[in-house]
Image 1: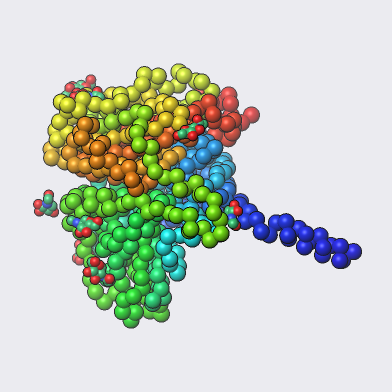
Image 2: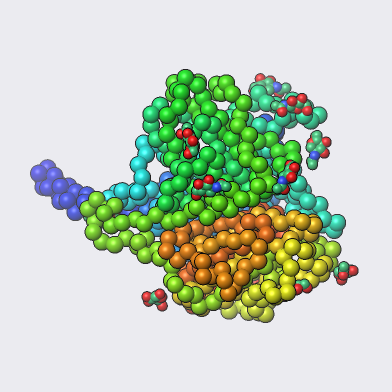
Length: 582
Ligand SMILES: *[C@@H]1O[C@H](CO)[C@@H](O)[C@H](O)[C@H]1NC(C)=O
Ligand SMILES: *[C@@H]1O[C@H](CO)[C@@H](O)[C@H](O)[C@H]1NC(C)=O
Ligand SMILES: *[C@@H]1O[C@H](CO)[C@@H](O)[C@H](O)[C@H]1NC(C)=O
Ligand SMILES: *[C@@H]1O[C@H](CO)[C@@H](O)[C@H](O)[C@H]1NC(C)=O
Ligand SMILES: *[C@@H]1O[C@H](CO)[C@@H](O)[C@H](O)[C@H]1NC(C)=O
Ligand SMILES: *[C@@H]1O[C@H](CO)[C@@H](O)[C@H](O)[C@H]1NC(C)=O
Ligand SMILES: *[C@@H]1O[C@H](CO)[C@@H](O)[C@H](O)[C@H]1NC(C)=O
Ligand SMILES: *[C@@H]1O[C@H](CO)[C@@H](O)[C@H](O)[C@H]1NC(C)=O
Ligand SMILES: *[C@@H]1O[C@H](CO)[C@@H](O)[C@H](O)[C@H]1NC(C)=O
Ligand SMILES: *[C@@H]1O[C@H](CO)[C@@H](O)[C@H](O)[C@H]1NC(C)=O
Ligand SMILES: [Cu+2]
């Protein structure tokens, strides 16, 4: 009997052991408001299981991630987006309130289930109103398959997220932004490194029970390193507004990954990073090990008034992780010098990943097919402007400022509820012969709309983002644009007005990087190409929280008839009530 059992066990082992089974990674999250002091100032912060940033999702390529989220925010709806995960076959799990689902109401539990089909560094964050900047965010780290060797080596892996931090609540901010007269959110009070920053409490009249620089919750974040070892640092930005520079005193960084794609390595002293981007950099702990070093992050592209810089420590073991470096923290680069930022954008090229990187497997990996199609089927130019519509301050794309309908697009499209959003197609471009990108768009030149772009399934689409002047004279801002459901090839960047007869000739069709978030530099243009091959409805928007709130986004539909049956859990709002839960 015993032998029989043993034999059975052995047999089972033989069957199952050699197959590297894709696993299911299960998470149960409780989301609620709690008083926290991330930058020493006490305010309500949204936490996941008591933490902000929330737990890091660790998975391996091919795994399925299941997150059951319970909304304990009491008075507020919720939705969580899995940033950089393409949701192939699961467009209803993208977590974009108003586009792919109804919001999760207080008390409800919502189950997100999706496959992490490609190794890399990704993020998750709230996608309901301006909720992200209240602290609902975290990292997703997807490791490579067992038999795959990455094109670089390192000893240890660490993740950090950079954010900016406001003391005013998102309600005050959103109310100001949608008021007449307009009330701007202003610059953030602090920058946070992995949820920790330092506001200067003595610069204000705040009482010590509200702002206390001795609070351990705001002690600088430290990464402990062993001398001589190489670290892969996965750096991400989820700022509400700020473009950032990140650097580590005395240590160069080698950029090796961007948004889940391997980069032709290049060395930087400081890394420019925009909201929604992720990078992996390698650092070698090869400096004097008797001390600690500063990790700093600074605002670039906007005048950094009253924003406390982000400070952390690179802690050389066995020094104490709270021991301050003996030096002054390095100052960041000049905030208004666009040239090095454009330069970094241009330096990012895709590394070729060859078959020999598989130790044993000679089959082609899907990621080898990364060269872009040489031509596109459709070119859409998106002119980005800031405007006033009937006295309300808005951002517009081709004179249309985006608003979300009450019924999420994915459901409306699938159920053919044509009346719930405008069926008038939005403009494909702007009058680029006559339009002057250096002057402000006239007041009332734009309108609001919830119309969307319908793309032919499996067609190749080019998007040209064109920047312009804001409502202020001689002012143009940086906008990090993020696409849901896809990665795109970054074909080029340029200064000034895009020239459709000349600029496409200089596109990089050899080794363009693929990304999901890309900066549009002041008065510049950025050209992207993607394949509309992921059935669903996908948001494409500026990742600056207040800019999207003010209308800076569009929605693409592709292959809606190929979308599988929608789960009833995403319904219940707008005109979908009848389709929802009984
Ligand atoms: C904090 O603010 C006070 C008062 O404005 C100022 O004297 C002090 O230098 C500031 N400290 C730092 C570290 O900036
Ligand atoms: C400030 O924080 C420290 C450390 O937690 C604590 O000992 C001290 O009592 C706090 N001060 C006030 C006024 O709350
Ligand atoms: C960083 O790179 C610069 C430029 O290549 C070089 O001059 C410098 O020595 C490097 N610093 C370290 C610590 O490796
Ligand atoms: C910066 O802070 C100082 C002191 O709190 C304040 O007087 C000033 O108005 C602030 N500037 C801006 C632009 O917010
Ligand atoms: C950058 O800003 C500084 C003030 O902070 C100003 O003196 C300088 O002229 C600006 N440079 C450019 C290129 O605009
Ligand atoms: C631009 O980047 C290259 C590397 O790609 C570097 O050698 C050069 O110094 C950079 N120039 C500026 C102005 O930052
Ligand atoms: C490599 O790993 C993948 C996924 O885990 C698997 O499908 C493939 O068979 C493996 N190849 C070898 C030679 O082990
Ligand atoms: C813009 O439209 C509003 C409402 O129709 C009107 O009151 C206002 O005068 C217009 N402004 C301009 C500059 O045309
Ligand atoms: C947007 O409005 C401006 C100013 O009225 C006009 O010059 C431009 O052609 C318009 N663009 C589109 C796409 O309608
Ligand atoms: C999509 O296009 C590719 C060629 O670019 C083709 O191989 C593939 O079969 C197409 N898929 C569908 C579903 O039409
Ligand atoms: Cu923007």
